[in-house]
Length: 100
Ligand code: TYC
Figure 1 (cartoon, rainbow, N blue to C red):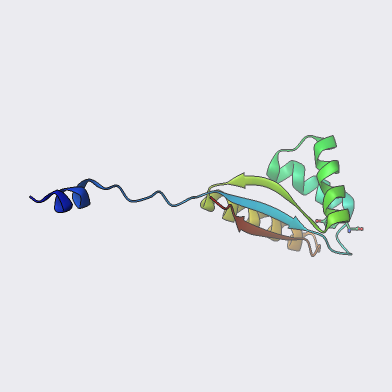
Figure 2 (cartoon, rainbow, N blue to C red; figure 1 turned 180 degrees about the vertical axis):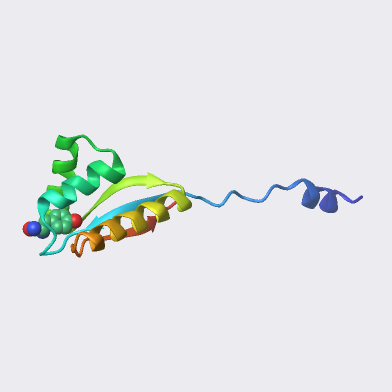
């Protein structure tokens, strides 16, 4: 086997980054209490941390609530949106892939 062929066989594929931020977005209708509840229920935040994140979203328009693998992050987004619609709240959550 030539050196080049040998290199090809042993070269490992670069790992695809698999971390995603879950971001909650501000809106004018979801109650502050409901967002704090969501942060405690799905992101396991203590009350004061949940309140601080909720206020950051309210002021800045969005905030990162947690960082997870793709599957877990996708599940969190579905849980937040499902729970919000069940409770007639328009709260939105989105995924953002982390840069390398
Ligand atoms: N802006 C909302 C209000 O004034 C509160 C809110 C905070 C809504 C965070 C969504 O992700 C959100 N009732």
